[in-house]
Length: 566
Image (cartoon, rainbow, N blue to C red; front, top):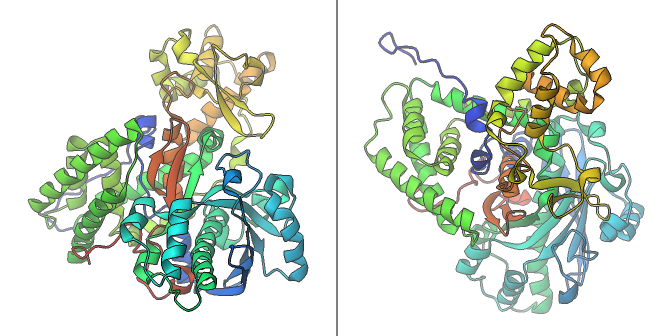
């Protein structure tokens, strides 16, 4: 509680110029507001019940399984199909046509006719079609080295090698989780009003969580069928350390540009959470102990995080040094002083790298679920609200917005080849975003409007000779090519974190920064870039399985526990 001798401290959210830089967005970590954690908290708090309704899988891993979660009002079922895929047919590429397993999340409980229909369509993925009863479509491939090792070890009655499990972290990785109308599945609008799906991407997060349950059941069943007299199951603590891998490429990167209001709401919630924690005037013994424990566990998790990409290698080195520095600082820090979390944050802003600062943000939220978790309800968006352009806005007002939001773009020479080195376009074959080289590929007719900074400068130049009090409607009647830039500027004037404040078509663009920002909000960890354009991650590593959701401490899985942090 604040006392008469404790001066009131006003805490404001960080500015967009600080937060919305690609290097910082590419340093984000999962947090209490990540969508996986939001989902599991809701399922636990509302008493959702798990049921494995069907599991008909043979020794090769071929068959069908049905996993159902029963909620207060509705049930949802993962229908999983296992396949016998030849090694030469296994590929993580989006153009693949066969996978080790394919899935759909069904709205309700499927009957035999539903499963027969899905069995003919889901294994085809893009080649098939589904109905509005299906909420997502997905597929996954084995991580052959660990998958085969786990099955062989269990069949022999042994536990899998814990070091190998720690190094790899998953026995299957998804290569796509489609929702929101893809392939005929239910539109987002059709289910968005359901309470369980109000936060973003809850369908997809539920799908992946149930896929993880199926995958671990699959390896244990294959081991049992291979050697019924000797086979065992994975020890629970070790089992939880196996997540679901994912390979994510360029297709996800433009999402952050194409959904400015939604992205603003994600960032706004995260920044508000940080501001609320910094504004707490007194810590408690419980929050102090929790922070210290989470710091210890984060350092342990960092030891499991590996990458060969030079950018990530450098960031991991910075993060290790940062956490060492933070630990040393905490040993000499008195958290009983007024506004201890603000003091800690201000110290971190001065002494830690961007990677370390964003990890500190996540750690500061950990002990404060009571002031943070409710913000998850603010992270969705009605994006159609931003489509209508205010034609009465004056040219002067629009110029002011452009200067405020896109001021950084004035520092670039937009005529230089390196400033427009890349072109975003959509592949005709796969209908997926791609990134071309402007100087070497003739893509002008196919370019997507994914360069807000450049387009804002073009708009600003076009407005140069117009009177300040002229309404923008007249300008747009004569120059409709600028409508999208006017719309974005008006959105950004109301939603401060809507725009990335870097060049998204420059020669130095690292699309993996955009991928990591989005994936951190999903709750992914252990980012491992394989190039500047795609990344491997781990999802739900350490999380409870559906059958143990109500038996383990709530939301205590994001950082692996150690004896020192228990």
